[in-house]
Length: 228
Image (tube, rainbow, N blue to C red):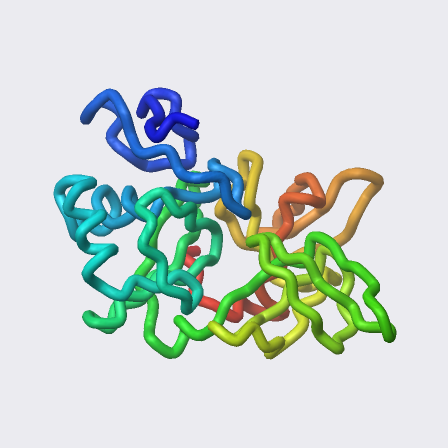
């Protein structure tokens, strides 16, 4: 697999300067899709400005403890995506991957207290032996938890132990974040499902979208800080 990607061909969600140079680092395949994530080295250089070259980014990753969801990562091509938490232990700095209202990926600084929390969408579930249920999450994680949740619901998890703090069901009135489509990055209240379309309300206006684009992030309000 090629290690680089032409900037002009990079996903529209990547808010990078496409005329700065010809190529940009291609992320290794991961749990997130390429349009929902960024290579770790690109985040350090292009988004946080901690380095000016990718060589410097590699050195930073090798010499400093950089955590993603509480686990140390050293690969500059590691793909970090939606709602992942990036931590620099030495500097005591914490960031979360989000979308802005134009559907572009942003890296938002957050407080230390919030860095221990992550919202994950349930995309599948499997019944194991002795009646235990394994939940498959949007970021590739799998957890076994004694909770009653459905596909489409979200779980508020603690990091890095992945303990379920709260179930966030996809039900009327739930706060949802849109992950794709022309309303990507927007937050509203879920209303109902009509055939294949989902209805959510924003500023008292009903908006149609695909059910798969909905990501529950809270009940009355988001349980994590979101730029909206």
